[in-house]
Image (cartoon, rainbow, N blue to C red; front, side):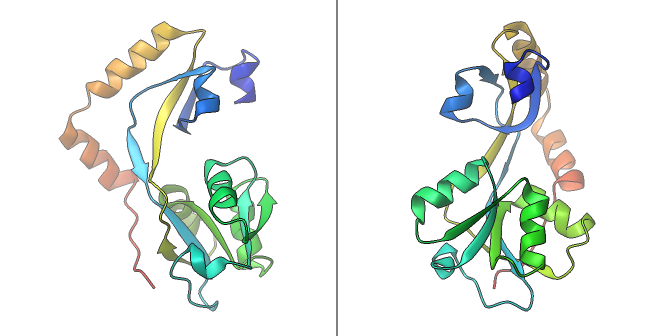
Length: 174
């Protein structure tokens, strides 16, 4: 985001639209949506919802959309801020935090390829799905139009095929 503000970049991929970002970015249509999920240690206590984390330590990346949502909705959850999602997962795997919360796409990637074999997806959250778009600097409206048109040209069948190959994550509740 700092690169966009400094004029060093024109486009950011996989970005959630927020009021603050709307001030300097135009967003394409959302091209994927992931639920927010809770991750804990497989040997940890049962977690069925964020309610179960009241009074406990939860590692979350500083500045992430979900971090702000949890802080607002659950002021009695003790948030431990990390630099990114991988660090938040490390806190949980090392026992420094009871859990972390992130979007299913990123969590699925780290659990599959990041070496976090002792962690599990414990539950969904009640928060709306994270809808990802492409953010384009307002300095380049023509680029926004090109990207929007390109996304619109992808058929529903092709979108489903892409998601099935690259974005398919499954898990069991509880």
